[in-house]
Image 1 (tube, one colour):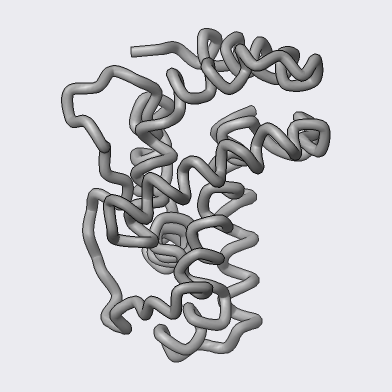
Image 2: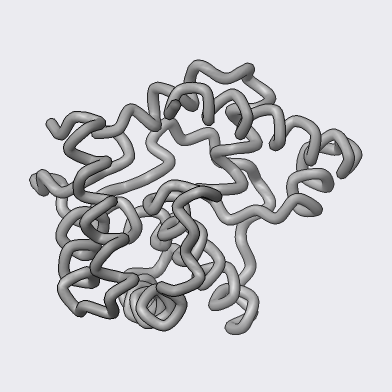
Length: 182
């Protein structure tokens, strides 16, 4: 299991390589994050072939937008997840796929492409445990939004709560999670 210092060192190395437009950055991202990113993508598109296409498209976007990454605004893993998540959601909307309106309360929000892989996974940085420390209503929103691909409006509709409440709870949850990474 990697320590926070090792993860931080890997992230720093990747950021430097991305800024230098060195293709080794993509290799390191793939080696260290591909399983976790694939899990996020697959949960949203729910199709292996589409998930692989989205992953490829996401890596192209990561490469093309490397100069836009700002380590002061977010961690590298968060930035990568957001690119993959947004690309997945775009694909789902583009193809007209419809997610079931029933909320999944699956404890394993992120699946692994290869179960025996030792590559970087959210569990290795304690993300799963940290999400479980949130208040139940915050935990549910974070899992649905970031791992299931729900938009804030979809969350409001599905949970029958005002969109303002969704935004407030999401913000509070993110602030709470940030405390654990400082």
